[in-house]
Length: 350
Image 1 (cartoon, rainbow, N blue to C red):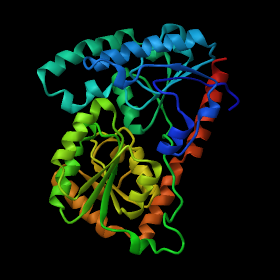
Image 2 (tube, rainbow, N blue to C red):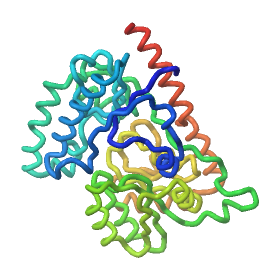
Image 3 (cartoon, rainbow, N blue to C red):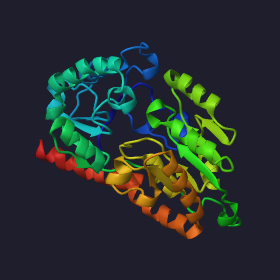
Image 4 (cartoon, rainbow, N blue to C red):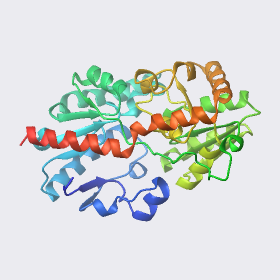
C-alpha cells in the first residue's frame, strides 16, 4: 500500500517464530515497534481493567513516538485517546472483552459486580464512537449496533488456505483420510473445550486431535482438560504449521465448540483442507451461513449426531467443494478489500 507501518504489540513478530507458527513473515514490513504488555505479564486479577488501562497508555506512547496519519486498532476493548479518535480505524473482532461478556462469567454475583464498572468506563470514557468501525462478520456487526449504536463495515478476516488435495499426487486422499475429528483454536475457557471432550467420550471409537496454542495464564485450564480427557483424545499444544497440516490431512471433521463464535477462522481453515466443520448453532456459523444447518448443534446430543453425519457425508468431491468455498476468505481477498476501504476512507478524511 506504500505506507510506513509502526506496530504496537506485546511481542515483536520475529521471522523464524511467525514462519513456524503461522507460516508467514511480516517483519520486513514493520518500520517501528512499541513494546506493549502481554497477557502473561499482567497481574493475576482484574484482567479486563488492566488490559483497558494498558491499551490506553501504550496507544499514547505509539502516537507520541511516531507521527501517524491514522491508526488501525485490532481490538474493540481498546481505550482510544481523544486526539486520535477521528483518525482511528478499529477492526472489531467482538465489541466487548470476552472476560466480561462470555456467559460463563455472567452467572455469578461476583462477576456481575466485577463487570459493572467496566461497562460504565467503556460507555462513557471510550472515544471509539468517533472512530471508524470494521468488523469480521455480520454477526458481530449486529452486536456492535446493539452495544454501541454504530454501523460497521464487514470485511471477513484472512484465513489460511491450503493446496488441494493435501496429499501428494501418488497418494489416494480418499483412502488415506480416517474417521478422525479435529479442532483448531486457543486452549481457553471461552472456547468450551469441555463440550468436545464430552462428545469424544460418547464417540469412543473415533479419534479426536485437538490442535491449539496456550498462554501461560491458561495453562491450568489446559492441564485440567488433559486430565479429564478420554483416551481417544490427543492434544497438540502450540503446534507448528506442519503439525497442524499433518492433523488436517487425516481428518474428515472439525468440531468447533465456541458458542457465539464471532467469525471462526478455524471453520474456514478446516474447509480449505477439505474438512467438514461442525459448529454450535450460533454466531457467524449461523448468521453468516458459514456452516450448513445440518452440521450445527445446540447441545451435546446434537453435536454427536452432527459429527456422525459429517463423518458419513465426507468424500473427496465434498472436500473439494469446501476447499473452493474457503477461497473467498483468502489473505489476498482480505488485503484487496482492506486496501480499497482504507484508501477511500483516507480520501474522505483528508
